[in-house]
Length: 217
Image (tube, rainbow, N blue to C red):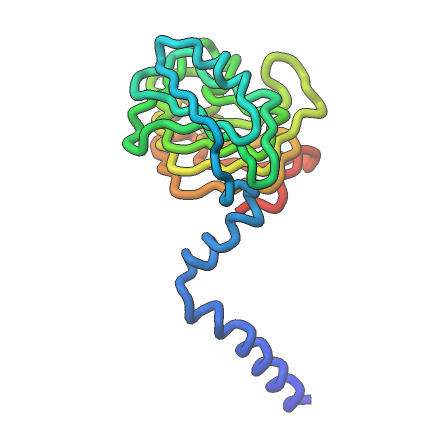
């Protein structure tokens, strides 16, 4: 029996050896294409809008393979990503400048919205945004939610890539969250984000077990 145990340990060590020899960050990055489904997208059209434009209408019209570039400035009316669905390796992108100068600010409207709200959307990349909750009583910075503005029991989101966001000052209450899901969600990639001075950093899924979050990276 002792020989069998040792043999088992040798096999486990052999399996583990390649994992500890490489760069762990590289190993995770290598999984992004299969988890997020957007890494190979070649965008066919790029549209640029600023805070003074009707940027929400631009978001609402996005189709697979299109990218929306948000110019530097302060966006005061939140961001709704509703019913936007790309395809595998033909995704939709919404992004700001790499220096986080596209700033979405929360408003003191007593917790009736999230600053960035996602619902019934898939194969979407969201990157390079700053979400500033200074002085706000909005609920969360970024959330895939089935409950805001009435019940949406079948709301979902999947194959979302959320990267290089700067989220800060959502600390009015411990229940304020930087990145959250409260509806069925799967195949999210969340990476390279800076989250500080928030009630809770990230909260995926729900304690009732009915709004699951699975297969995330």
